[in-house]
Image 1 (cartoon, rainbow, N blue to C red):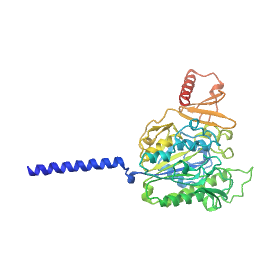
Image 2 (cartoon, helix red, strand yellow):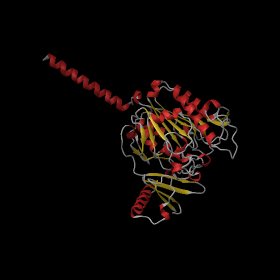
Image 3 (spheres, rainbow, N blue to C red):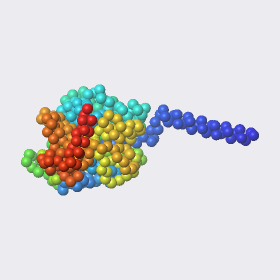
Image 4 (spheres, rainbow, N blue to C red):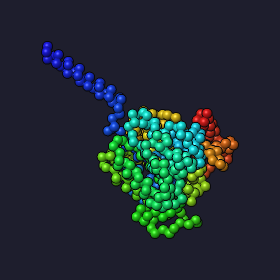
Length: 431
């Protein structure tokens, strides 16, 4: 009898202990299980200038980016906006540009929007240390409006976005703007390394390089393999300079990754992407130079995306339709927030471990001083339409670089049905 009583007491205590642990875990996230998040954004990087994609004949030497790709997933159908500002806004808010008013390169994101970093920490008991280093480009010329205004713990970078000289540029940090003379790609990496090394809890680093955006220039010789390049002047072949800038960025990414301990790297997910397609001066076949950056053709919006690291067990190519807003929910879910779908964002974390379907349509847009255009695709057919109702329709399955506008001829029944379906979905998105 006494033995039975002791056994019952032991069972009771065991369940009580488990119950307490479960309650505790519900209140305080287990930070040891929270992966670090490293988001790297390259500026004006097209699929034609990075290994892994068939577009382009000339590729830079990028061993560190290659490792991110080969150890994880390469996404073939990732859409951004065709210029940098709205792409960054989409990632930061999870909302399409027509909702935030950020559709062009000069638009300013309202500080009333909830940033990805705010969303994560408000739903994880402030688990993450957060930083944005590098290009901001969501505040116009207002140097007082930086990521710290939107709940990010630390910011150091270029408020206005572009630099006019990679060796002499304006750094904004702690509300102060100073001229810097360190090669900008190296300087941003130094800052990122220093910040990460100071962290004692899980961290989310958003590293936005200016490279390989213009101006075309000669990086330090030990960072690239393009040989002895003269100073660039207008009219010269820009591709070697573009490749050199990409290689210098890769060199610095290698420094950053090597600065993180093996244990920390094992607990880090790495997301690498281009914010839009290449500038017309460096576009390679099969892209047409008039149909890359700043346009809604594939050369302007279908850009590189590689993801590897903690939680990514699949490798190889992934063909799901993904858009920039989807990174909001995806990164939030990686951080422990069960946000499969919010705003215009759908998490694709499931793809890290298994095949699944994320979305049936992709949408993007641009509005600037000369254009107001949007595009939608179901992966096979793609419709482009401007504010005046002028349309273009392409069958990407056999015409991936949009050489034949189907609307120049009478549509077949299948084509007409597809066009109607795209128009219907477009109206749903923009309602």
